[in-house]
Length: 278
Image 1 (cartoon, rainbow, N blue to C red):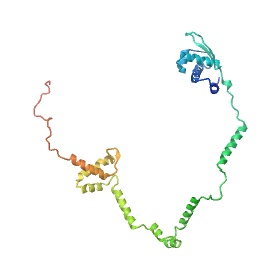
Image 2: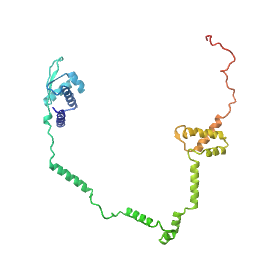
Image 3: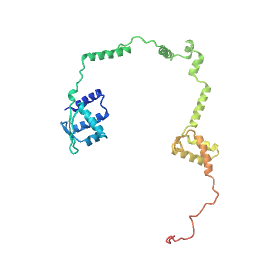
């Protein structure tokens, strides 16, 4: 018995049989499992409690109702024993012979090919290569400008003037203005100065400008160098100068000498005998 064909035919019948509900399907699958354990021999002996436990059916009335309907519809042949100490006999109806394989004809294959070709033709595609360049305005304009730039690579300024280029544009392309150079240098200097991690010389110079001793600059630099320049050990530092100002303020608070007398309770001149009980 081919159980795969049997189950396939069973579910084909379930699709067409609208009177079945999930309880019928669960009960039939439980009965199929008992049939599988008995190596697909008919008839088999079943007990109500075991079938209800496997099929997850809690009501005895639902169990008997579904079993009776499966018997009436020809899925199983049920013979109750009406004896609680003796199992009921059940015969599973072989449904594998009801499964009919579908034969695909050449006509269906040809129709499918025609449908695929029509869908491809809708896109207006072809296997032949085009000999002419498509007329796309933006792409052609870009290609034309690139071609002119390639031709003008070996020309000097005077040649460019003769060809119709303006003197100011040529100068602006070849020789940058001195003011722009200064701005670029200033920006580079600011970027280097504000870079994180900062240079040790910049840190010492900044602390000296704020009239703070160099030892504090060493503490500040070593502390943040060890934790990867993270603020509070979590987020990345954005401005090392602002962090340095906070370090200076905190150092002033912690470096204040405490003038109050410190308690000295742990030191005593009295020799106490710790062998005596409290």
